[in-house]
Length: 129
Image (tube, rainbow, N blue to C red):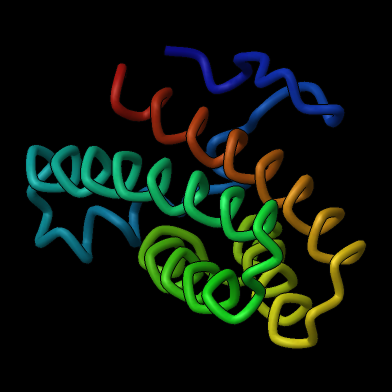
C-alpha cells in the first residue's frame, strides 16, 4: 500500500518512513513480521484505552492520574517511535498534568490525539502491506 495515504491531519499526507523506523521495529521483533503485527495490535488497543482514560481524567480535573496515564501511554509509544511528535505530545500532556495546568493539558491533549492518529494511520498502512 502507498505510504501517501491521507490521515485527516492538518499536515495532509502521512509518510510512514517519517513516523516509523520499520527496519528498527522489525529488528526489535527479532525479524518476525507476524510478531510485529501482534505488537502493533496490542499497542493500538491499549492506546485507545489510555487515550479515553486521559480524556475522562481531564474532564474530571484528575490531573494526578492523568499524568500517570499519559506516562503509561508515553512508555508504550516509545516502543514504536523515537523522540517524534507523538512522543513529545504525550510528554507534554504528562508534564502539564503534573503541573495541574488545565488549559495547557487540553491543548496538549488535542495535539496528542492528532499525533496519535498519524501514528495509528502509519501502523495501519504497514499492517495492510
